[in-house]
Image (tube, rainbow, N blue to C red):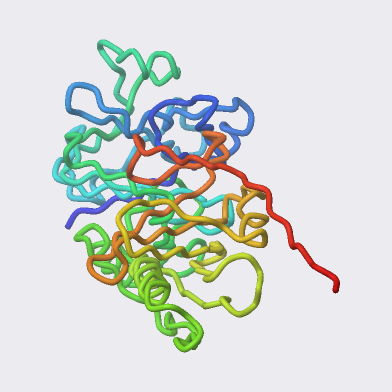
Length: 326
């Protein structure tokens, strides 16, 4: 498979900059200008997505540089088709991870200017592109699913350049893992099973919810540990590379996703940490359904990845301990 890796700045949606979604990282240009031309990489215009990456240019070479498409099956023409383009970005917590991909993409040797710039692209000063694909072939991973880490600055890994062809024999393992990811499969990492919880101290519903949540994050590539007995305000800790999520799990036997938090749990919830997750599992004992709430700093509120229309309502309540002295 012809594969091209493109490293860009970090965003949640790549559908234009907004108060809720600002680009992070992405090199000196983003740091200087506060924006990047990749901010619309997953914005759909007439069933097409247009991708931007800043390729390297030879020393003393003017202009935008070029993508050496001959390394992905191109010839002397200006473009090559049927390429798997894998988009990567530096996660805020550290490490470069896969954020999405285009399948069957067209990759151009030189920067292409829009003849009629789409409105959103124009608003974000995105005047052209290097890559395009059908929107149906474009996949942007939700934040919690961005766990596949790309090796950097090591033999067989991505270097400093934003464009990587992964065409050396030492890159075979990375390519194999990415192919599995694109195919909807994830390889669990060794040691992903955490220390065993004591089922005697947990209700069956809660046990089923923990199991469902643990399995979900392990399938995403996290290594999961239980901290249920540590009284820290959450039940599980899931680690992928340098990113660690703190997950409070609430199991319900019914189908209505409403749950209460203890004062200790609510204290952890109220920090609004980007690393905190509230996992609510409904219908736990029959057909468990997992809903994961996280706090989005960009959107300044609680959101559910993959369900932008879902609303998370928080109703704080007061409580007290009453002691009667006799």
